[in-house]
Length: 124
Image 1: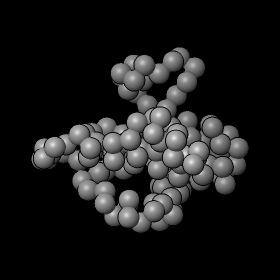
Image 2 (image 1 turned 90 degrees about the horizontal axis):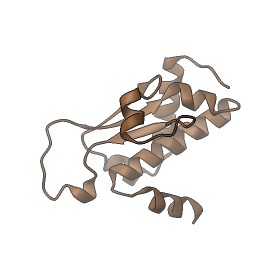
Image 3 (image 1 turned 120 degrees about the horizontal axis):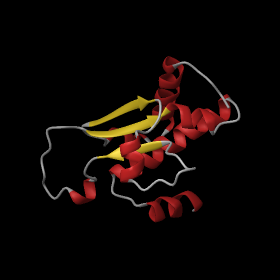
Image 4 (image 1 turned 60 degrees about the vertical axis):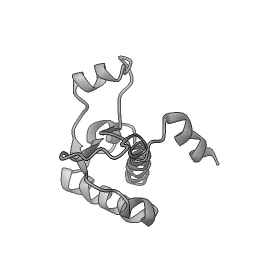
């Protein structure tokens, strides 16, 4: 397990943003990226997360592919969960990679991809 400060965790998120494909990052509109220590019990229940599983990240909003002209006033939200990401990482390099992978996964949900489509892209 790795344990870093919140500020360092946020730095790792910013580094990940810089490393992801620019066209996908620049097309993000009205999306807040936030850090929470852990997912809430409500989030785990709503997503049917099994007792011994957890979330590294969560996208909440209306995916672009489903908006059909809907104008929203509140931003979509991508949350990265600091403690599970740290617990699932062996060292700092692993943590940075897990943050980047989780962020990319949640951005893919913003664009409307489901888990099967995301896995397909990851294995291509």
